[in-house]
Length: 238
Image 1: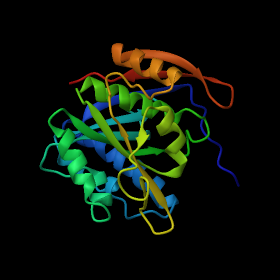
Image 2: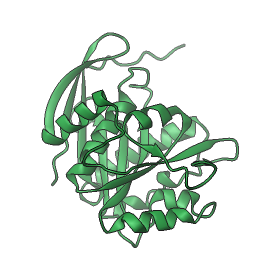
Image 3: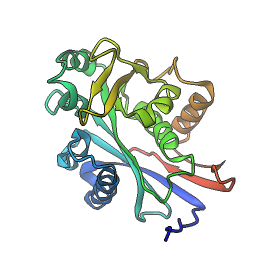
Image 4: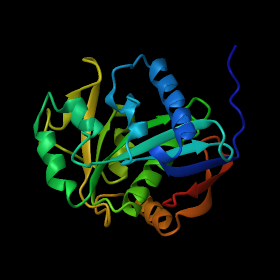
């Protein structure tokens, strides 16, 4: 018997520093782990949970009611020169040039967009991963990052390019790595200019800039099912 998905009218996108909200971090981990298990993926560096103790990790959590169950999430890890970014742990042994790329950008402010996941409740609405990407890139500017790394799966590649990332062809096999398993590939990606977003598609860039200028805001968008969903954002720095 097929599960009936709940009717969703509102989605709340909330940002916080990982060390400031342990309970919400646990919601994130529970949801992310469940999604990875569905796909049989267990060895993935962004799924490690030691980030909850890192003061340079920021989280964006999505729920259908304020402070409710986590339905989606993503994180930004800021490079601090002490804790490697997840992309460094993931591909560093395959191509050590990633270490220099991160270090060269660290003083100006760099980090990584990682740990993106959607639960079954909102999968198929056509809004989850793209809206989370928009929120994260907007947030990267709010926390004064200049550049932003990522490691994307084939399913999120198209949205990553729309969001302004370029493939890091200087490493791996034209940017690609066999990760997290030998039969899967991941692509290393980078936004070179978070402030101006020259490569970002115009419609996505407009949404990012609007959110960056109005970190507490609400807008309506249609889902793939044709229903309007209210997106509530709170990307304030606390």
